[in-house]
Length: 265
Image (tube, rainbow, N blue to C red; front, side, top):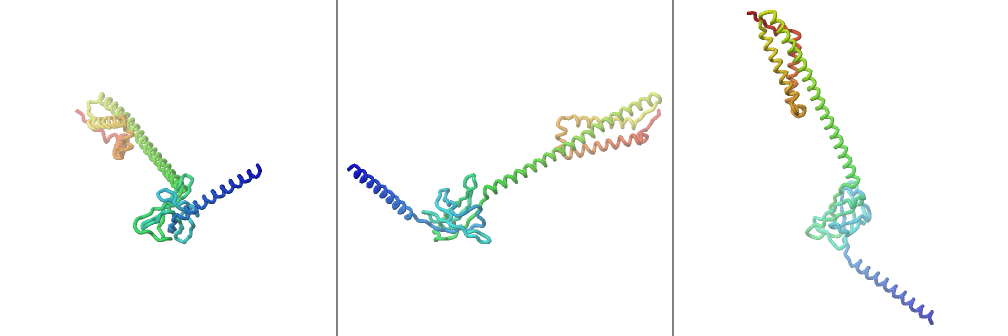
């Protein structure tokens, strides 16, 4: 009797389980098939990494799938299904990235106005894939590195040019000061021996002293290197002054008599 009762209870439990499974299945089937599914086509120039089963979303909410694809020479047709919602005039789709792993999805914008017919065609637009974005980022970084290298080279060039000019100024100053001392010594020596006046030579010495003072003040002034690097006109003016001073020094040494006018009282 105990075995019979146990078998009866087991049979009842099995029947109840089967009934629950069948009831759940029919309830789900009724709910599933009671939902309206709309079919559309999306025409798009390219659809990178889109395939059958790719998710279709509306405002980010999953609402369908890509049911199939058809390739043409100039475009791709995506066959999509959307549950519960019908698209309207002005609807369009965008192929977007989903997550950081490069998955793709079709984001659909429903549009406004009259409802589109089943299998109506809406325009689609592709966006760069994660790989495309990484490639663009690498290219941008390479461009930035190249620009930084060019900027450093330009700054180095300006610095070298400024340093070269400062070296020329210092060299010219030394030559002016040496020449001025030599001329003064010569004037004193000759003046002690004769009653003469070196009017033109005195004027020349004053001029050399003036040039020397001006150049020395400019070189020793704070921020001169930065000003020379930024102000091209200042650089050219200073270079012209240095060149003129060097030409004058060379001419004095080559033709001293040209600058010597002696007046005897």
